Image (cartoon, rainbow, N blue to C red; front, side, top):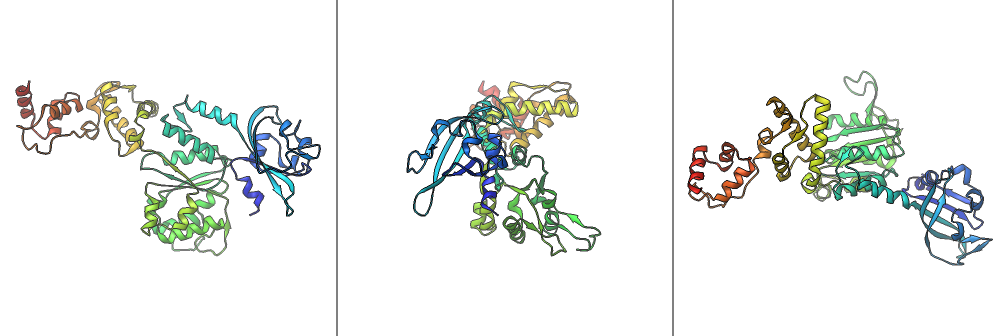
Length: 436
């Protein structure tokens, strides 16, 4: 691969010109930001291409004089007008190109649109949802910024997070915002495909490659050509498949089962796992060379218990989806229900919350209500664990605090509170009478 091709994948704009200001380097991000195509600028004087010169009065190459005559890097903001007349505030860094005699032979400039980044950050504070991902917790806003940045380049991304946190949504968002957005997005759940089938699923097979192969079949990598392949639960693949996957990443070539003819594929790889791959690597279950190949850009999604402020937003979204998709006439939840949802630890994360709201909505409609109350929630959410002294072995030492907490957790339902405390309902009534 040529160096120019690699530079095209960088997430920031790059331009280079010689001492006569003739442009010799102009990457895809520079094309996007300025509105000028590479063929319009290569070989031409920078001042002839851009009205007033790209850097304006800050240009270090004016009237054939280099200002200053020797420098390591110049860093400054400029106001730039693109080909369509739109103004941009650019953050520019200029480094010299030095020849063997240590004379300046030209420069390489990198630049970013500062204004667009600032506007994006401002917009994030106003939204509840980004590319289908719901949440406005600061941890999620950071994820959104990462998505926007990594979408510009085709480097491999590793998304880490517990089950149910929305790893595939993050992968889809990266694809939607990338230059590959018009190409296919092909998800593969590596943990759900048996070892005996995953190679043919990923790489395809030729007719007659094995019994039952009555015609050739393209694998997921071929289907994703020009787009993105999403390898979910990559930590579950076998050591043999790890070797084969590493070769594909290194060479960009795949071979169908039953064939020796390599096929070139242009695919961006996004992987995801709920495992600690660094630990898996140390314990010898995951190859370190593959780990470093797939985790060029890591993104870690926080569990729902670390961003509980997003629960009301998620609940509102799920209720709306249920109403629109399943014609269930439920439009709200009680304050007690919201409190119970906020108190729960959500081991299944956002997916579990969605399932709980769906279950509760069905229960509410069955009981003739258009809102969800405590009795509609599953027991695992309602019966929050309470702290009871370890020495409590009988009802004589059961504290009023423990009883009150149980009643609070169950919304005053004495039968459920008794079950939570591990006593009969009659015993609970006796205790309440005694402690009143």
